[in-house]
Image 1: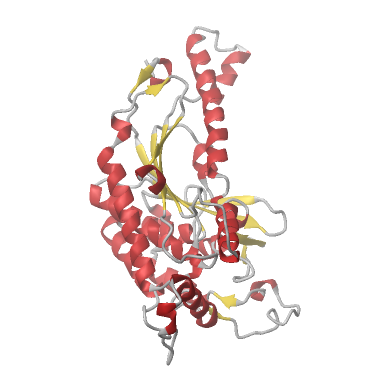
Image 2: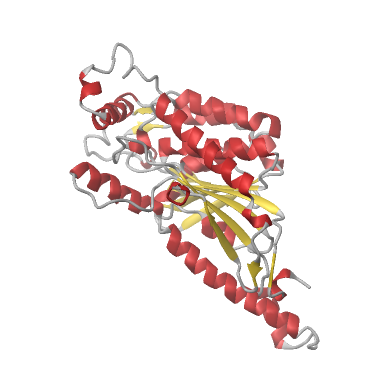
Length: 384
């Protein structure tokens, strides 16, 4: 008898999915998540990402297994800034050490905004947009991502991706219709433009044209691409959900606190609410599945038989992971690519995921009938 029809049972996942939010420099955490998954011997079957999550996802799905970790590491090493410099001829002043982490964080963010990032983006030579003047949509931004296009072409094998056993989905929003779209390797051939579109966060980056439509970063519509995997609930799944923006915090007291917290709330994208909604939908699918099972003897021509396709008995084990808040972070933490910060976030992603994969709660926790989504919380708050 299928799992959905039993009172409670252990449901073994049949596929592994990685879900990556957007968050700029915070995405180093996701590189650590994948490294831990790889070290465990488990392979990802599907990777879904938005913005920096789309870049990480493409580096995974667009390379054979033996190159995935290496290509991820190469990307993050390339975009990491040296700990001691603000660029050619610059260095952090000694006063930054006495004024605290907040001042150092501000300087590290300032260097990124001023100089751009190697292999990622550079200040746009055309100053029309910065001066408030009209320009073509493809240049309506402060920065040029031509370096990122070259990086993607170097580090992602798009021919391999077309046939990759790892499915890739990346989210972007249509600028004119305001509708989210997921470009999926199962449905179309993906190229660098799809990854660039998913990360085209305005006004820093210009929209990217695909098939005559302009797309911006999917994170400005929904930074939590869970809905794309949950709308295909046909297979028991283990989903590692690597979030980058903190859900919980203390009441803000300073302007820096307010700016940081408002950004966290904006880009956490109501993950808890989305999970709650999907839980209800899954319960309805399970109910339909159960009814169709009980009515299996109905004549094949019965109208009720046509409704059976709406049912589903699959279970999603959702492992909730969350990047830690580092000392001195403010609202610019997503552009703080200082090498030490990148290393800390990557190490945290590895440690959190390794802890979850060692615990394996999906192998011991029984799933009640009608329970389609089971959340296993391995966030820092739970660990503490």
